[in-house]
Length: 241
Length: 255
Image 1: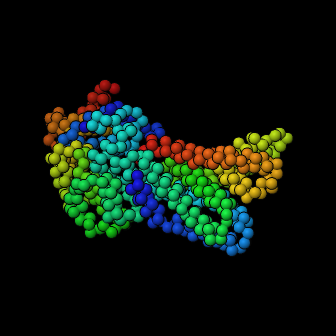
Image 2 (image 1 turned 30 degrees about the vertical axis):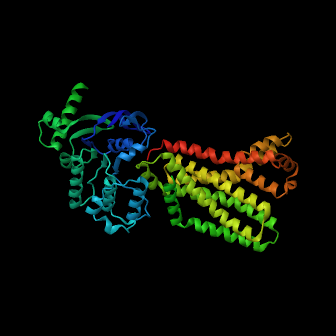
Image 3 (image 1 turned 90 degrees about the vertical axis):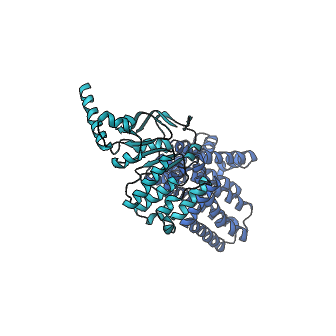
């Protein structure tokens, strides 16, 4: 559904994405992992067109996204740090996005689950980090889009809300949506995703299904499997070097 | 597009700055009319406001507004909306609110006290300068991510066109005063929208004789229909060129 071909992105001297090629198929759920600053968010933003790649192409449903904008109709995006017009209230913000996307079928389950109705009059600058995150999540799921891009969805949420959100993500996964999720909590990803892509210093080092990774490394948990995969890779690299 | 313009408008109204600007123009115009009964003298005094204050306010307000709507722009870019539409909507909303503020603030007292054709020309110059400097502000805003730097660049534009350019022009005219400079100065004037507006205005007020031989030369060129059309065309380029350039940068900008 989304194919990324030889994408490079440089910010000055920093090579944020270095020759990344990746195929993302619908019906699968991808975990994007890697250390801080390894290029996960840049890759997500490139798919959305928020970041314009220095070279390389990204296709959505076979169409080049560079000059397109309509494809974003099919994407729900939850940013890592939600930045919103500060003097709008939650209610105004949600109304505005609804008005701009003009869609009849809405999925307001998360707005109910997080009890955001109670806070519709609150202005965005007065919100706590967690509430802001809830607003981001509610907006990402609101339009029942076939693709969901979630950048650290559970960071900063309270345990009850985390469970709600994970439940919701799993539900959407079962409905056959394409999910792209980053997180540093690997146990969460173990439940939520089917495939894994490991990015380090802008390069895609590994991408396969979680099952395959587990059998390759002989580990049962995703966290362990990743750690083993990295040490194996380092070992091979040191031999080659 | 209309929907996005609407939200930018609502945001501008919420800050109340535009209302203050309208009030300021309204009060100063009424005060000038009260002080002097000769409407052409009032228009002369208003000319200084139009040439100095209007560009300054337009460029600073538009730059600050652009940075304050960064979050909004970022949010819109993740939605199925064209980049160009977001950019042009921002420009349209800012430019139209500044123009409305100017027309209400200066135009209504003129209508009440009566200012004639020179008043209409003044309104025209004010609107055009607002549009030009809003374009320049957008250009300053997209070249850098740093708000302070962008405001610095915006102020530099204003200084350059309001003060520095005239100094340079004067220096050229003095240094090469032995040569026939009319055609060269005429073309150099086209490189500064503020000068262009000033000359259109002075010719309308029919005091070009005060500017001596060059004034007569300008009158000959700019006073004729062809000259008027040409100068309006150049001002249009001054609106479109910075905006088109800014839009090109914005279409490739990372957010």
